[in-house]
Image (cartoon, rainbow, N blue to C red; front, side, top):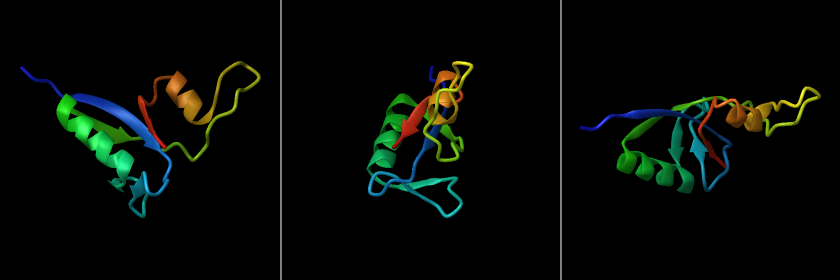
Length: 82
């Protein structure tokens, strides 16, 4: 029996590794995209793209993080493509 796992990922457009469509909502091509798509097929999972607003992350006064680091820490995303 197989089940499909859904995961969230975010990205920075960084040619030649990640190319996005004009709306920045779909991964089009690139080395990282090919790798994640191959892993997706082997492990039978699909992904949903989460907008990161192109912020790496800064530690805040209350010891939490914003940006991508905060998203990883809060389990909003599981995969980051750079």
